Length: 355
Ligand code: KG4
Ligand code: ZN
Image (cartoon, rainbow, N blue to C red; front, top):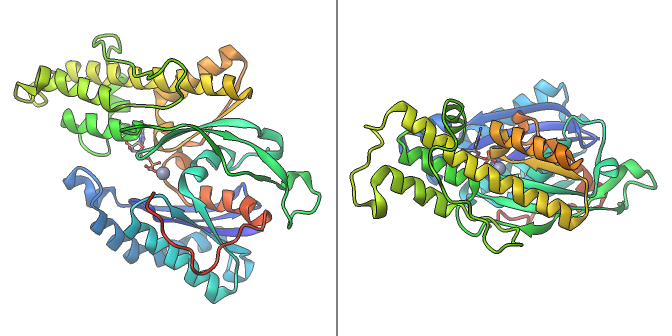
């Protein structure tokens, strides 16, 4: 079964064709970073306009790269929440139009649930083999822990156990202020490093001393699975501007080594909390498998530390491939397959939802 996926929730216009939920036939991503870089962040009006300009070409390229025509498709899947509403509307409208014109079922998925699903793309094993598990989704807008469970075969999947569908994830913890990716982007802005900050800090931190600056670890209540990264961002700001921001920014006068040490110290604090809470969630849910997805799942220190900690505990870790960590449409087409098997289709009144 071939599904066309469409993604437009923030600043990536993407389309993909995925066979049977996991075999990615094509995944095309048109990034808008170049359009937003001079503003230091995503400008919603520019993002939605760029989606409109690009969506048709991106869908056409995804079909052609997969070598499929409209007659080979079995459905259209779109992320209809959460995100920038003007951006989401472009993908939702495109998906509805294609589903209606081509007589195909329409499926709406939650973008964050797709990030939780993304480690399964291109894998031989699927939900029937891999669930239950805990998923850590770390992106620019979200830092969440989910309990992923399987439910029985859906109405369209007969008795075949490999078509077990993927239940809506149960939230175990979420961020109460800045998401991890947002903290990376803001810290990069404080250090005048550029946008988006995650990959830049990841690279810079490799040459830095993670113990040089004692930055706070925000554990919240002792048994809380929620996250808070606003405090550490402020602690970095105080290092650069002086306590209570009394001084001028030293971002342009600090040595490269000082910046690398601050980047490494920031990253160590974020990663320590992400790893600690994820393992706590796995223990609490009683599962031996952890999925990791979202843009920050590209981070080299997070991948290394989480893999090492999971190995010590005898837990299997499934990291999304870097190309499926940041926003893409393959993860939507993958998750949409299981939703479709469960009979969870949407009508042409599917709306774009910001939250
Ligand atoms: O999942 P994503 O593409 O978009 C959202 O759904 O938000 O995530 C984007 C976020 C940005 O904040 C970006 O700085 C961060 O992922 N990111 C990283 C890395 N690559 C991307 N953060 C840390 N290390 C990286 N290597
Ligand atoms: Zn995302």
